[in-house]
Amino acid sequence: MNRYHEGVSETAAAPIPLLDLRAQYASIRSEVEDAVRRVLESQQCILGPDVAALEEEIAAYCGVKHAIGCGSGTDALLLALRALDIGPGDEVLTTPFTFFATAGAIANVGATPVFADIDPLTFNLDPGSALAALKRRPRIRAILPVHLYGLCADMDPFLAMAAERGIPVIEDAAQAIGAEYRGRRAGSIGTIGCFSFFPTKNLGGAGEGGILTTNDGRLADRLRALRVHGSRVRYYHDEVGTNSRLDTLQAAILRVKLRRLEQWTALRIAHAQLYTATLVRLGAPVAPPAAPPYPARHVYHQYVIRAPRRDALRAWLAGQGIASEIYYPLPLHRQNCFLRLGYPEGSLPASEQASREVLALPIYPELEPAQIERVCHAIGAFYQSGA
Ligand SMILES: Cc1ncc(COP(=O)(O)O)c(C=O)c1O
Image 1 (cartoon, rainbow, N blue to C red):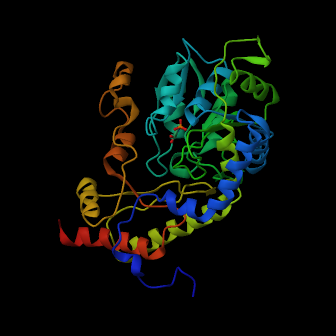
Image 2 (cartoon, rainbow, N blue to C red):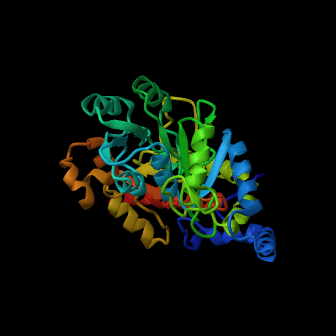
Image 3 (tube, protein in one colour):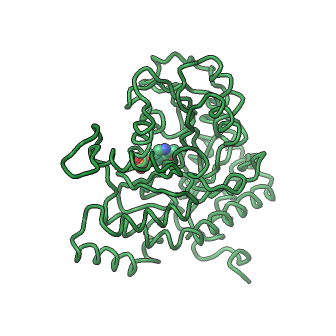
């Protein structure tokens, strides 16, 4: 009997966090400590062999020729836009239903985000809405889809639209390391892929970190220069860049974790399947993540349901020690800082509706099947109680 068929365990009454990074650390403590000690003993704390090795390993994992470490996922987006010469006067097409950094990076290079609505099934940028926006806005210089929650956006239509206009596609793959779209890994599909190693990500460091992926050698060279003040030869600067290197200690820790990533991803997928099967079996009136209308490997950075009376459900779960989260309660076109862009309430209805309905349930590799059963039963009980 594997642990998917065991009954409710003694963990049943303990609080269930959204994510338990201490459980993960406990399983890799000695390897992480050895890796950190190795860097400290070498005192090669900036770039150095661990960053170069991680870059090679991530490039191989994502199926690209080049990977370039940087300071965070936000910096990855900023560097990608800079390397593609996107700046003031340019517009970048993206989704409003994402973490703020996606559009924040566009604004921070002086460009303007153009928001198109999402596909309600996948929560990702909708190709039809994107095409309509492209037709209206001739100054769009790049398309920036996000692989939200660990599911790749429907990339082929975006690649076709971009090719027709001769503009690049930047993948915001911050939540999607290891995700696949029609057999292609996230980060290998567009012109540049941007990843975050924020600690809560499927592959997370012990602090900030990020990486860029590309098959374009010229862009890789420019990104490597941009992360060290535009310098290729020390103290000689070809252009104005910034300081955004991946910390060597982070790289050493991430290399330990990368070796476990496939195993952890398989557990996330199994947990998601158990959630969906249990919610369906219990007849809970919530919508589990839908299968996308294209072949994909969802890596379940988040397991997100649509729930009627979402906020009351969330409070009910909290009352039983079950954590949940809303990603994201306000779409970016309705954020104070972007009201000036002129998207009124109701202008991107699928994104706005998602913001009212989504609820992320606990998911992480070390989660126990009995805990998943408990979350699902608590959801079922909420709707039966009429609370
Ligand atoms: C979709 C998305 N884009 C960008 C980022 C930014 O990454 P970071 O927090 O590493 O700057 C994140 C995560 O935080 C994210 O979820």
